[in-house]
Amino acid sequence: MMNIVLLEPEMPANTGNIGRTCVCTGSRLHLIEPLGFLINDKMIKRAGLDYWPDLDVSVYKNFSEFLEKNPDCAGKLFMATTKAYQVYSDAVIPDGAYLMFGKESAGIPEEILTQYEDTCIRVPMARDKRSLNLSNSVAIVLYEALRQQGFPGLEQEGDLHRLHWARK
Image 1 (tube, helix red, strand yellow):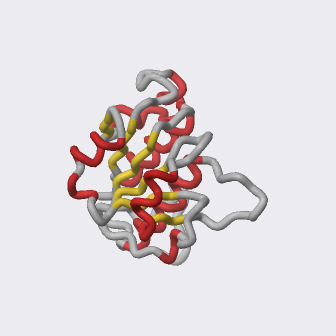
Image 2: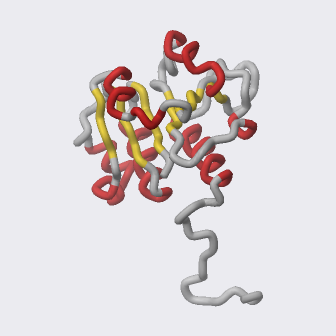
C-alpha cells in the first residue's frame, strides 16, 4: 500500500481529487494540519464524489506528530518538490513508501527538505513555470510508484459495456 502525505493542503478541490485517487489505487491519505478547509467541506466531497467515505485518511496536528505516528516511514519518505535534483522516475520507490507533497502556495519548507535530500524528487517541467497542479503531481508520482510495484491489486484490463473487443 502506498501512502500520500499532504503537508498543510490549502485547496479542498485538490484534496478531494487526491482522496479519490487514493481510493482508486488502494492508497492511504495523510493530512498534516493546518488545513485550508474543513474536512467536511462540500468542495472536498464534490471533488471526491462518492469515494470520500471509502478513503483511508489520517489527520495530524503537525509534521512531528506524523513522524511519531508513522515510524515505518523512516527511509521510505519521498519529498516531491520543484527544488529536487532527482527526477521522480529515476527514484526507486519501495512498496509502502510515503510520498509527501507541500501546500499549493509554498511547497514543503526547505527546513524539512534538507533533512531528506536523498529522497527529494521532482516532476520535470518548463524552467520558467512555478509548479504543476497538486492533484496532478500526486497522480504522476503515485502511478510511477505503483508501476514500479507492478500495480499490485489494481485491475489492469477492462471490458466494453455493450460490445466486445475483437482480439479477445
